[in-house]
Image (cartoon, rainbow over all chains, first blue to last red; front, side):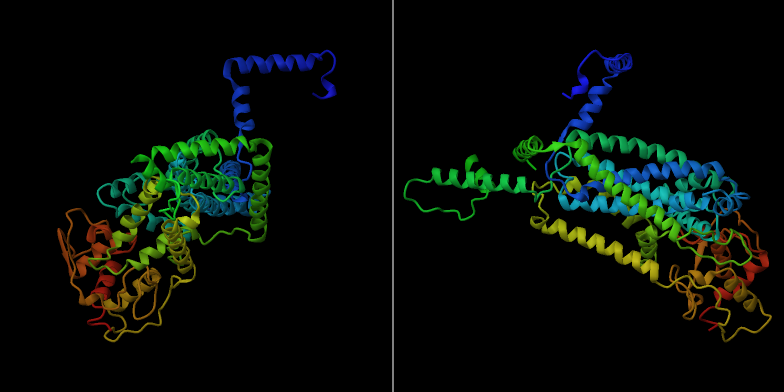
Length: 276
Length: 273
C-alpha cells in the first residue's frame, strides 16, 4: 500500500470506482483483464517466443496503413493505376504509408514462418496446444491469401499477369477449381469486376477471418499458457529429479543383493514394469 | 501421448507456472521490444527501398512478366519443375497436389507427431523433416529469385524455312511481340515456366471442345480441334484445349494473328528449325 491511499477518496476516484464496478458487475471485464494480465507464465521464456506478438502487431500496422490507403485507392480498372501513382507521388506521406504496407506484408510472411519454426522446434504444438497450432496454420494460409489478393490491386503489368497466372492455376484444380476461379474473377475471364472483387476480399473477407482466428489463437494461448522452453533450467531440473526418483524406485524394487538388470532407467521402461 | 503423459505434462506445466512470473509486465515487455524493432525495420525499409509502380496493365510494350511476389516464388518455382508434361510429373502436381498435401500436413502436424518428447535433440525425425522443408522452400525461393528471369524479345531468332512476308514470319512476330518467350523457350531463348516449344510441331494435339471460340477464326471450327486449329483454341482458351493448363488465355489478338501464330507453332521443329 502506497501512502497516497491514506485519507478519504476524492470525488473523481469515487466516480471512477463506481463506473468500473458498474461495468465489471455486468461484464466481468475487470476479472477478465486481470485473468489475462496477471496470470503466471513460466519463469524462463525465450526471446523467440515474442514472434507471435510481433506478427500480430504487424497485422495491426497493416490494418492501419491499409485503412489510410483505402481512403485514396480507387478499385476501378480505369482509375486504380492512377490512384496508386497519386498515393506514391502526391499524397502527403503516401509513399511512406504504401511502403510500410508493402514491406509490412513481407515482414508478416517472415514473422509467421519464423513463429511457426519456433513452435515446431520447441515442440509447443504438442498436448495440450494442438488446436492452437491448427488455428495458427489457418492464419498462415490466410496470410498467404492476403499477399495474393493484395498483389493485384497495384494494377501494374506485373501484378496483373502474376494474378492471371494464379487464377489459371486455381482453375486447373480438379472438380471445384474452375468454380472457385470463376467466383474469384467474377466471371470466366478477367473483367471490370475482378479488381473490385479482389479489393473486397483483400480488405473485408480475409481480414475479418483473420481477426476471428487471431482472437481464437490468442484465447487459446492465454488459456493454455506460454509453453516453457524444453531446455529451460527448471524443466531440466525437474527432469533430473524425476529420473533420480525413478532410479531410486527401481533400486528399491530390486531384491537385496541383486544386480540391476536394466541399464536404462528411463521412466517408460518403469511404466511397463509397473503395468505388469 | 497417452493419458499418463498428458497428466504428467499438465502437472509439470502447473509447477512451471507456479515458479514463474506474471505475464504482465515480463512477457509484455519482451513482446513490445521486439515489435518496436520490427516496426523500425519496416519503416526503415520503406524509406530505404522506396516502393515503385511498374508499367500499367495493357501497356503497348507487352512485357509479359508472370512473376509473383517473392513469397510465392516457391510455388512458382515448383511449377517450373513440373512443367515437363509427362504422365508422372503433370503440372497438376505443382498446382494442386503438392501444395494441398503440404497444407494438410501443416494442419495435421500436432496429430501426426503425438510423442511427449519436446526437446528437438531427441526428435531426430521431426528435426530432419523441419530442416528438409525449410531448406526446400528456401532453395525454391532462391531459385525463383535468381533463376532464369522471364526473357522478352528474342527477335534475333532466325528459323530456316521461314521466308519474309509469309504467314509463319507474321506468326513468329506475334509470338515474340506478345511475350511468349517470357514462359516458353524456343531454340535456347526464353523462360522455363511453360513447356519448351522448340520442337512442339513434331507433336500432334487434339481436343474436343463444344463451346464457342472467344475470337472466331475463319477455317477453324469445333468441336474437334487438331493441327493449327488446336493451337488457335489453346491460345484463346488454354484449359479448353489442355485441361489443367496454367497458361493465361490470350484472347485479344486478331483472327489473322491467331491463324499466323498457329501456322508458326505447328511447324516448329519440323518445317521451321
